[in-house]
Image (cartoon, rainbow, N blue to C red):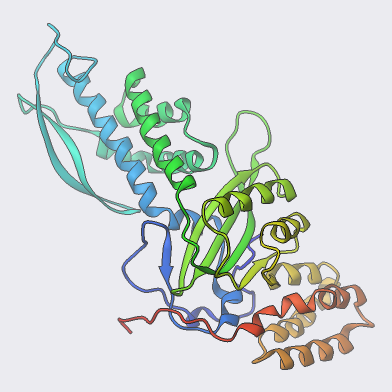
Length: 371
């Protein structure tokens, strides 16, 4: 369901290069200069793209989990259940912290607070346990962003990091901290500087004790006025319908995405999404997604003819201008109408929206200073 995914048969990856320097806090990336028409071929919306854009937020959550695990670990070492508790069972005393960085697949997590004991005997094992349990932590954080932070999930993650059952107080503190990160992300103010919006629904698998194992993530990506590509937000729903899309888009609007600088919205053929867009952003032109359209065309063509038929259809959106694109459509339609009439009708009925991008010239995108 990736609305602006890589177009099959189009070798356009070389036309884009991301600037060095990683991700920003809001999950945005600067792009090099390219024609607007290239965006419908190379800007992708995928599950990994979402989590990649949440790299900074994910690192903060991993840091919280690791530091909380070490707090529990040292309290167990010195023989107390609370940080400042006085007990005859004490084996040692705390002796502040030292800071260390940790290289991870997410990048460097900086200034982790590692506790020390007065006798110098405390040696944390949290880091080595984390190395073994990274997939578990990664999966848990994704689930928290999608479905919210739960006591059960936090406890399931902390236990293998600590090596024993965490205290109820530790679990409660971690739940509160992580929930704050997630709520902050999904409720933050959105600057109304987005020029091109891309809406799509992505089917993902989630682990559940009961019910369906597949859910849909509704996603909003954009190209801002300054030429930066940004993941704006996403929301998990049971199914992709008008109700879900309307709720999602209204939330974006209420947080600041009013569309005052908006020029174009790209969507797939989902009727619920189209109705939601018409309700929330009624005056913005809509671009239909070629990826989804070509999948629909393929479903109406015999398998032995699909490659040839789609090759001709792809020539339509690769034309230099709208006039040439229209001419290529009619050439393709004349060739295939009597062979696969439903495939031709599939493009013909939405041709205007499929070619909207030709009305927008070039995007002013940020230069690659290292080029």
